[in-house]
Image (cartoon, rainbow, N blue to C red):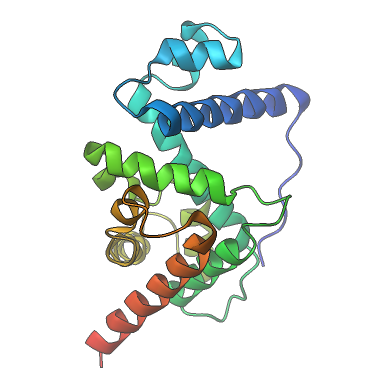
Length: 210
């Protein structure tokens, strides 16, 4: 298992809190009025900071909204670090994401159903974000995977694992945002649906190698 990292200092915790508030405000505004109508100025006003402060954390609105993807990736990494080392790489990634989805209703969870729903809806209203959203953006997970594989992050096999995982997630969750937008799935059903889709997609991948 990976050793727990020391708790960040007060200044870093304040920066993390501001970043999280900006992401939360962006998610709320996009949910209420859509992606194109949401401006950086509106997001700044919602958090009571200046647009310049927003730009310090996120140079563009696109990067701010992709912060929601980062938040999911970081939450998945927290689960990933608890998965036994003896699981194969792809199975470990599956287990960590399933664990995150199972705990998503926990009040202490880093990601809740509302934020996850907002993320998927944002992907629906902003197709340009979709190719970027399926990339694993958490450097800590790359490092943890390299440790498990007994190598370093420069090893192309580590990159390959995450490329395959991104393809699994992309295939598994394809169309979910459209279903949410059309009202075909309730937010309360979302974690179970996403979990089942991940299991099905992984089973398909494994079957291809037989």
